Image (spheres, rainbow, N blue to C red):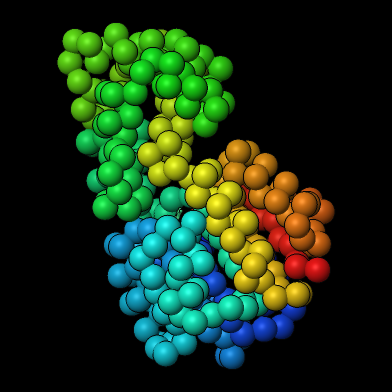
Length: 284
Ligand SMILES: C[S@@+](CC[C@H](N)C(=O)[O-])C[C@H]1O[C@@H](n2cnc3c(N)ncnc32)[C@H](O)[C@@H]1O
């Protein structure tokens, strides 16, 4: 259902400085968490995810390690509350494997522009903001801003205008309808990425407040990381990577001068990992 990305690289770096207590802030289906528990028999993993469906599968995947992990349904921006609940004040390593899982891409929540589903895109179905609200209620200016900032879409203005014109006739209800509006103003060019890619990324980041959560969470890790403790982050687009790179440079001893990227072999086996970048740092 989801192949863990840069698995060996991430876990080796995370465990590289000895230790016992690890927080997997994006436990997903438990792929990385399982490898931590396998490689370090002393390890205890606290797993966090905002998607309750993922947590059910993680619980199942980690069955063999009962008593060595606990799972929390929370946003990682609330990791301090989770750790306080666990009575933890010092952590040996934090892992973030950002973005969406295959489970989410395949579930009918409107994450993919290749399917026609209701506009939703919430990683946590209990959150209030949906893609439907963003697409049908945000002003033309707000839409333009998120397409430019979160999608780095060069034609942000044109797409925002097309959405506002289309929804004035009838609300845009599905991913298929949104793709039609986007492709009516951004023609598909052979060999290029699908014209709706950036717009979908932008809406997903807005719906899940992804960059804000990441900034808050990274800054919260600092007060829990022990000296020598490690932070490992796998990101999937340049906006996340920029935040991670600056954070590490400003607060940690950087262990990856250049980000680690998947080998050609890993990309061949799992094309979804092709944009992954891993950065690691250690608390001085
Ligand atoms: C790429 S998947 C992680 C996969 C996992 N490492 C594995 O091996 O199965 C990313 C996960 O992070 C979760 N996630 C993304 N943003 C989050 C946030 N702000 N707080 C908590 N979980 C988040 C998603 O729900 C998703 O399950």
